[in-house]
Structure formats: structure tokens, C-alpha cells
Image (cartoon, one colour):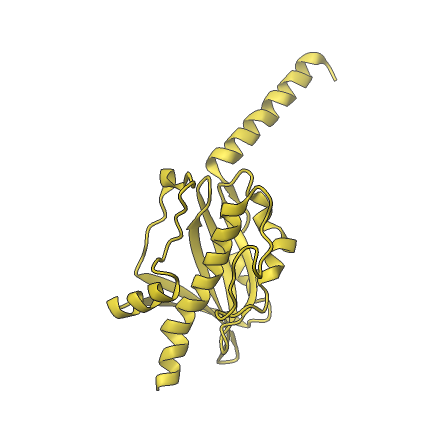
Length: 202
């Protein structure tokens, strides 16, 4: 390779790395993520659910008083993730039965928002699968790896879901590891409070 060509390649790689770290990385589109999370579903239907003030208060109590896990040393203040009072639930059907449900959740990482998708068993709210859809991380990129995410499979809302307790965090990416724990716990609590609790009271 000629010196000039070599220098151009190096500059190109440097620019690509810079753009990736600044603008983030999209790993999965919504449609692909839903198929990945609920591959056995014959159909996926969406339901939007707006929370009442009472439901928000209950959910926050179960999550330690918050809906968004901002961390003191996070730089995500640059691109804030805001609380919302409405969520979309994606139900995977077999026939007419709701077998699974998926929730897309965004939490702040160290360098910016991390977008997760979490699928649950529709009857028990147990974690069926999860994936990272997009991130603007640098050192937190390993949170998208399967060997980290598979720790959450089969977890329920009664599990601690805490780094250094039942979840092994990623060295150098503690903030991202903790954000993942919170996102998964929140998905389960949202579904339990907005769907399962209502179903039991009927």
C-alpha cells in the first residue's frame, strides 16, 4: 500500500470511530428487534397505555422512587432521557392468546441514551429475552454482548437485579451495567402494575 493511500485509510478509520462515538450506534430496528424477541409469535399487536398519577406513584415506589436512573458521574445530561407517562406494549400472539410482551425502554448511559428491548412471558412477567437496540456508549459497548445479557434471562421482579449481587457487571462500564439492570427491572414492574395487577383484580 502506498504511503498516501495508507494515510487516507487511517484518517478514514479515525473519522468513522469519531462519528460512531458521537452519533451512536443503531444495532436493531424496531421491526427486527420485535421478531428477535418473540420469534414464535404469529402476530405482534401494539397497545398504548397511559399511566394514572396513582400508577406512576406505585411504579416509582417499586423502583426506588424514580423512573429514570440518572447517575452522578454520567455525561448523559447532554442528551437527557425524560420521564413519560405513556408506554407502548408489544404483544406476541399465538392464535388469539397473548403469550409474550415486549417493551422498549431508554435509559441514560455514561455517554448518552441506551435503548433496550425487553421481552417477558405475558403470564408471569419473567424475562424471556432482551437486546440493546442502540447506544451512544464508548467503554460501555460490551453491554450489547450476549454473554452479559443472558444473565437476565429467567429473572423476575423479585430478583435483586443488582451489579455485584446477581448480575456480573462489565469492567470499565459500571454505569452501563447498572442502567441495564434498571431498564430490565422497570420493564417488569411496568407490565406487572399496568397489566397483570389489573387482570388479577377482575
